Image 1 (cartoon, one colour):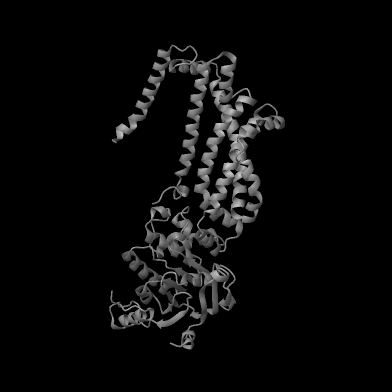
Image 2 (spheres, helix red, strand yellow; image 1 turned 60 degrees about the horizontal axis):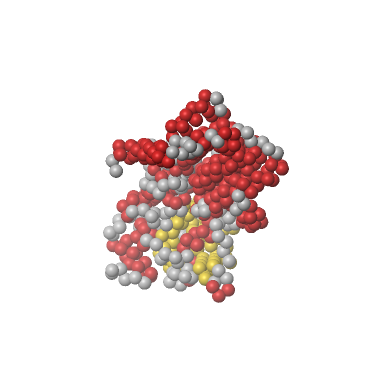
Length: 262
Length: 253
């Protein structure tokens, strides 16, 4: 697919996030490693986009730049018309469940970002999001008393509670077992359909990306470039044994250079 | 090992040790070194003269004063230095040079500055415990996983609130280990400090019993009391480590 086609984007949606000619290099001189090369992409408001690529290809680096945690060497990131200069509560980063604060209860974690609100409003939102992620009854529990999947729910609820415009998820389900991972995907889709946040989701799991995303950006290894954009034009809930699903899956496997025979 | 066995074995060890001690004193016909019976009598004697509780109390007060002053200075300083590499680089050389100097080496200066009295003893305890607290706090802050700091910044917390709600609680489990070690050192030092500068406390009890009348039963009684109080202090600090808001730092579940 031509570079032109890769860049031309976002159908009818209003553009929320725009990245132009982004470059990131780690190290200096001869040891310099070009991690991200000439990344250009657009994401529409309310869109669910997956960044798919092998481990260590630079997709997490890209997400860190978008989140404002890392400054690019060149290029720009614009969200809602304004350049990104640092982290911002309107755009929340969800790490693997490692990001949950272990010294706070479930309530404390979910209410963490609500310090500007009144006590009543805090309590109302905590109650709402505890229920939304299915953790009622665990409000007073500490993270070390919860399972990995429950901790992940806490972190997602903490992010949603501040009502952000954009969610960045960095392999959020990578540390979970395969059954919990499936359940969490379904939960995330349910919540996304309800709240319609703009979501950027980093994963190395091809099936995960096709099950979740409106669009999958397939990334190459270092330096990371966007190799291809795959539109996933299947309605939710998605039939993962349908002809079309399998076709899309084959396309991505081919693009990554893997015949899907093991 | 069965449960009742693990319960009963410490008592068994104690009984055996006391018996061996008693036997050694009897068989060697020593006139100076006291047996357990004499030590117990000595303790009763002290308690009867209302000295025991007062001595323990005075030692504890001096430790509390010196230790709390060390926490009050060491904790904020450690948090600051842990968060600022520039400040840490500037203050590191003096801290590293002062750290290996035994508090006992400060005794002459402490007496010049504070005179013979509780002030000098408190100062020595402060010196002994402040460096371990500073160093442990710096290390604790530096080893906070970046993911916690990033998450805190992401939600837009002002820096004072970030320190209070993220940095401090994230570092707290490791800080508590440092505080516990520092309290142990403070208790070690109070005894030495009381031998030179004051006329009460458990250190004074030991040195005074020897000087005033070769009362070795009271010397050994003082030693045992020091050990027992030390164990109690340590177990209080360990109790703090089981609180739920810091427990995550001490277990892997």
